Structure formats: structure tokens, C-alpha cells
Length: 182
Image 1 (tube, helix red, strand yellow):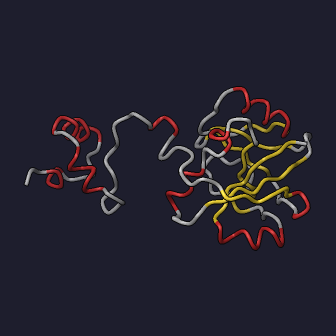
Image 2: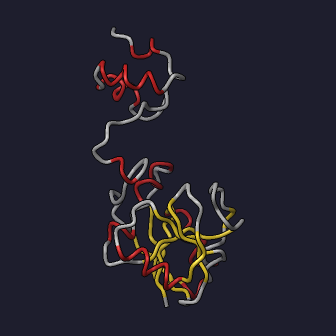
């Protein structure tokens, strides 16, 4: 049996404990199925297993918890990097493929709901695990933030004039007067 973890906000836990994890409508661009559950195999590497936590927490300031469950090794799942087409494989093969390397940015879609009896445990998680924006963002200069987003002004003020000129060539929808020296 293959073990997976589904990351969910704290407010959903009571419902999940009562009914299991419902298959939600997937809005992913390259999703091969209409409904499913996003999850990731439980690997020896804690960071790789819970890599989506920080990115999910960006959208909701609520505490994120892990719901651990098991499915049969023959269960068909879809794996792929977010924003790219997914491939259908067995749950055991998904665990093996994603366990070979850190596989940052990968996601697994289980095309059915998870029953209450399949859930092994629900655990609170440290809230600072994972990547933000995209997996390779660490160490790269930031892109221009959306106006009104968290700390956008501070980030724009911190960048140098050369960074601004370089970015203005690629991002034309933000007026240059936003970045004018005061």
C-alpha cells in the first residue's frame, strides 16, 4: 500500500475526519481529470514530501495540516510538474519515481475521493517548510510584485536602478513612474 499526504487548512479537518477527503473540481490547466485530490507520496525526505506547504500557505494565512492516507499500489494516479501535462501511472510507480530525487514542483492527482477508513492520521506541520512562487526561486532575483501585494513597495524600493531598467524591458504593464526616485 502506498502512503500519501494531502495538505489542507485547519478549518477543513473536522469535515475530513467525518467524511474523508472529497474529490474537488480541479482547476489545474493540464489536469487530465475533472475531479480529484491533490497529494504527494510520503518520502524519507520531509521537505520533499511537504514541499507544497509554504506555497499553499501563501494563498491562505490559515494553518496547514497533513492528512496521511494509504491507497492500493495498483490505484491509478496522475503525476507531473505543475503547469505541465500529467501522466497516468500506478500509485507504487508514482512513489518510486518521486522518491528517486527531490522532484520539487511535482504533484500527484488521485482521481477519486479518499474514504474515512483510508485515512491513517492527521498531523499539524511546521509552517515554514517548502518553496514559494516556484521551486527554483531560491537565490534568484525577484520579479516585480503585483501592485497591492504584500510588501510590494518595499521590494520595489530595494531593487537597484539596473534591475529596474532590465525588468522594464520585459514587464511593460507596470508604469515606470511607480519606480521613479523620490
